[in-house]
Image (cartoon, rainbow, N blue to C red; front, side, top):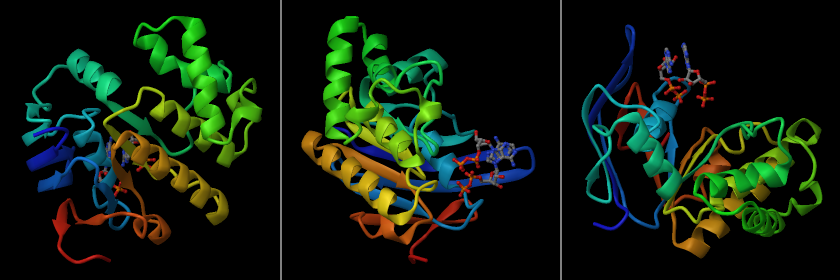
Length: 223
Ligand code: ADP
Ligand code: ADP
């Protein structure tokens, strides 16, 4: 079983918009998977359902053999904190905190002491090539720096699975490639699974496999 991720016949609607219409997918431990497809095809919704941010209305989601979609909010939050790292587009860092404090945050939630958390955070910022902005706040950072910090924050707990939603979407191709290489290298260090939502072909080319969505279901054929 290990850290296999499975969605079985999941459906999710927002009002009359059917974002996912009976989608099934299995992602094996250590796989690097790109979720691709046109805008509005359900990529982000799938990522949110797989990572326990959202619950599908029907169908089932499993992580390591454990049913995820029936867990309550608190249990899903705990699962995310303990096993998952999530990178959002535009980083979504806490604006009041420095880069290093942002990276340390998941460790503090995990009951690590502040000093230890800050030391580990700085080590990950170093790894991410963003140590020079450790004491800067998000508003002072460029898009590429923000995403490097966001990647460091997602990796600091050594997650089994890294979810990334358009991690390079706000970046030029050079900065995007650097962020992506960092994400994949770090994932490999931990033998982590990587699930990336992207409409960027450059990103999809790095993946072991592509899950192509069309109108809320998978299509066999890459775009
Ligand atoms: P993608 O990531 O492929 O662009 P999304 O999963 O974001 O697609 O969205 C799929 C569909 O569901 C779109 O039509 C989108 O507008 C709609 N949608 C997504 N989230 C919401 C929401 N919170 N409220 C209403 N509609 C939503
Ligand atoms: P992403 O770039 O990750 O697809 P979006 O910018 O599409 O994210 O959406 C940001 C937030 O707004 C998400 O929580 C998403 O669920 C929600 N959302 C997306 N589409 C709609 C919509 N049509 N109506 C309301 N909320 C939406």
